Length: 345
Ligand code: ADP
Ligand code: TRP
Image (tube, rainbow, N blue to C red):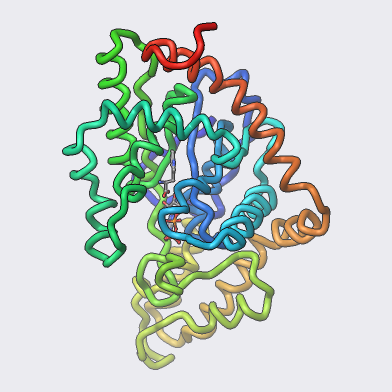
């Protein structure tokens, strides 16, 4: 199993170690991702690649997406696309588990049980909730209770680590607090306290406008876009207006994106070329496009093949849900028994 380490940014070129069967792992890893449209390079480098590399339990958080997406067809489509993205990126659904959150509706039951021991103050301090309100998202109970559902997602598998981006750290800390409250309330160690594994070594991938690449900013590069569309988006990356002959600032977005697909020696060489002058941004964009096509070429082909096979996605999700259920079931039972709800078995 690989661990995020070191302070330097990992690049897309770093090697991908072989994963080992889930059963043989000493550490259990669990993480989720919301289905909010076809994945982009930021999602790949920031999340999906780790989920491919670290064998574990992963799920598509369709319940959570209900806090923002209010269209059933759109949600179903996003779940489908995201599963294809995972598989195309090399996710092994026989070693790891990939399931759809709503295929384990007991998660919502557990979220209720956990909500009864969750202090209001804890939820009121959630920065993601405060940020969403500040951004004008209307406050509703689902948005407020979002971290409780996330705690249920996590605790039902008693994982050791939860690999997430920095923005999710607080949610994992809240999960630990909620688990402690439940254990204390019922005098039993039903839940283990999970450790967030923060992927600090992963740089925030910039979008074509220089801000963080994000669906909500409409500044993404999607690795599975048709070639023409992807090339057009790369060529539209915002640059300053330094003339070709002059030295270039390698802090520019186009260099930052190119660097993600280059190794240390290549980056040094590029820096020298930029400092010397005579390097046009258009040339760097062309090189970036070639590298993206090279990096994702095999994945693009694989995705097309997978998309043409009806039933692939549902098969993966069905077997993922069965395997996830087998792990979660005893933990749900312990939680019910500790709380004195449900039939005594
Ligand atoms: P978006 O901002 O496009 O809606 P999400 O918030 O759904 O993306 O993020 C899904 C996952 O991808 C999260 O784990 C997040 O940390 C990661 N991620 C999203 N954007 C980036 C980025 N620009 N750089 C690195 N990781 C990212
Ligand atoms: N909130 C996470 C995000 O937006 C997705 C998520 C839901 C999650 N449940 C989780 C992540 C449990 C880790 C563990 O990225």
